[in-house]
Amino acid sequence: MGTRILVVDDDINICDILRMYLEREGYEVKMAHDGEEGVLAFKRFDPDLVLLDIMLPQKDGWQVCREIRENSSVPIIMITAKGEVFDKVLGLELGADDFIVKPFDTKEVTARVKAVLRRYASNSPKESDETLKFDNMEISRSKFELKINGKIVDVPPKELELLFFLASNSNRVFTRDQLLDKVWGFDYLGDSRTVDVHIKRLREKLEGVSEKWVLKTVWGVGYKFEILQ
Image 1 (cartoon, helix red, strand yellow):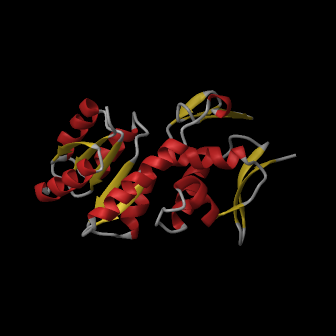
Image 2 (cartoon, rainbow, N blue to C red):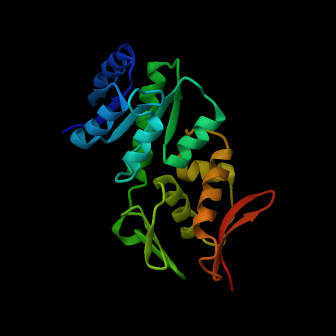
């Protein structure tokens, strides 16, 4: 079975165009035209990637994204006609992997789909390096699971990937651009605020957990996961 892509958009013409171009690339495509149908189609179709419009009837794209992220780390590319910074920040907080702004070029869509799928595949963990353990915290990249004081904490996949990367390279400082490259991929077209949003959300979850490590800002440079002596 080939790579499966779910397209959730209430514009039937856009769905038909996307399906035509994606099928030309060899993908198996399923379409849904409202949010509720999209959630059901996700459960039944079990896609490898979701193209998700924001403005949908029944349930909007934000709610669909939330429901998918409750049980799955499958890549999600949000489709928006707004292009507002607020939309992008909210999507990133909910766990979206990329954005496409309408009107779009179909070649750009297929290129972004390929890029996100490559990043997702390259970030799949190896058995030898799937779990990191620190004082009062355990990060499992294979399960996309964060445990604090032995209890599982809800965390979006991209936040976990960012934390895992920094913790895997403890005491090393990374600039925002380096983190975008390493965690989101070199072809990600977002800005550095993406990193700041994810760091802020991680700090809210990690505040007061341990005095032996800290997610630290190095002013004028970037961020690091510091092991305290």
